Length: 305
Ligand SMILES: *[C@@H]1O[C@H](CO)[C@@H](O)[C@H](O)[C@H]1NC(C)=O
Ligand SMILES: *[C@@H]1O[C@H](CO)[C@@H](O)[C@H](O)[C@H]1NC(C)=O
Ligand SMILES: *[C@@H]1O[C@H](CO)[C@@H](O)[C@H](O)[C@H]1NC(C)=O
Image 1 (tube, rainbow, N blue to C red):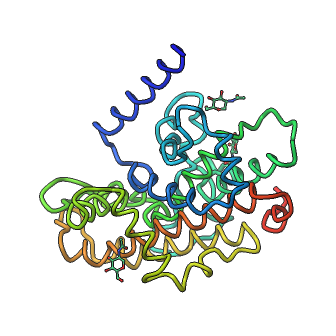
Image 2 (image 1 turned 90 degrees about the horizontal axis):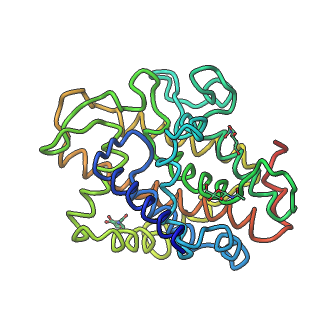
């Protein structure tokens, strides 16, 4: 009990610290990841929901979203250094395309070391859950948290950005009245401004509004297409391609370092951010349902890795 408390305290402390010096270099913000994971968890079939419940540590209280930011928190710890290149993809400047064999590597050329490779890796690890693998290299809880987090990241358009500006991280600018950078605008600023302007800063209302738009609104006819997937590798490449296309068309387009982005940029980009959060959540549930939902449907999307 005392040990758990201590652990939880450390965890909370870490979350707070992370909030306070919000560096914003990696991933949807905490808010974006939590919404993606909440959306996904609500779409799980009973078997998959059960397994997710079993894999989550007790202090998460059955809530996947409580731990969806974990991969951001640990990526600089010595033990998890290997995971830091897995949050994004650097594509050649202005190419506006994604090519797995060209782009999915770390700065030392380590193959598969990018967010697309990571999603394959952790999906494949999780698929062993029902196969009862005895492979002790894999920690299923960690695989679940990494997969859930990276499915969010790959849908954040600026996570599949240009190499020289680190996905917009080095493009300093202002968001309304405060200093920010282009990457962070997409990770967090747009989400927080939307929550403040339309939902009284209540993330849950914002999340419900996103869900309403795919259950019976704006995107209700698109959800089936979003979930469509025969071959996981091809699907992941498609998600990354969508992101770099959006990064070019909406992220970088017309933006100069040092300028101030405000209403025009916010109003035109907010719908894209909301859609990407929805897609990330819907597709994460699709993968978890296939891999954890029952033995039969697993192999058909998984390539031999
Ligand atoms: C796959 O996961 C293992 C840890 O389980 C890690 O060592 C390896 O670097 C990962 N590779 C990719 C491409 O994600
Ligand atoms: C799996 O990883 C979690 C989170 O890092 C850790 O708390 C747990 O002890 C690990 N489980 C095993 C069996 O190593
Ligand atoms: C939901 O869809 C409506 C249009 O039907 C749009 O005005 C609104 O911004 C959308 N909300 C979210 C959170 O995506």
